[in-house]
Image (cartoon, rainbow, N blue to C red; front, side, top):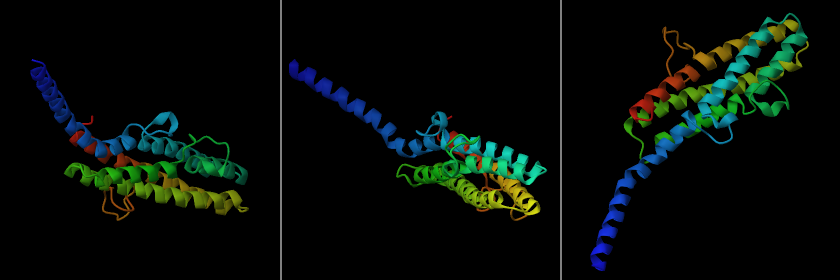
Length: 215
């Protein structure tokens, strides 16, 4: 009787392990998708990396607009420093950004979604959309670095006209970051290199999660 009970217990344990196996097998790709779309330790409120990038971009875009609309060099520079803080908070101790940085968040998005697509358990949908999300986030990271360089030039400028021209460029670049840009002039904005921004990354992340039943 004891042996029969042992056999039954062992069988139940084996069945439980078998039932659990698909969950762990799916976890690698889904875990990285979750880092981008749902939660990531270290971001403000531990939001997903894409949400962190979107929040910083919103702040940067607002202050770029304030800078471009300023009527004196001091006003332009004050708000451009705020843009720089949202893009890369290591440049200043205080500012209106969330403290994580657009450049860092976008790079993290590209990295983690890339790991999702390269996971052994990645589905065809994950492989396809991870390229779309990753390319858009890589665009954003590159644009953010360029904005940081231009913002530093504005902060050091002594000429109002030159500072205003750079501020206008930064406004346009942040619009591309938020909404993407029609770089090839074909009338639409894709996820592709030089075009996709955070909006396109969000669209393809949503499509990926829907395909994976992640909500």
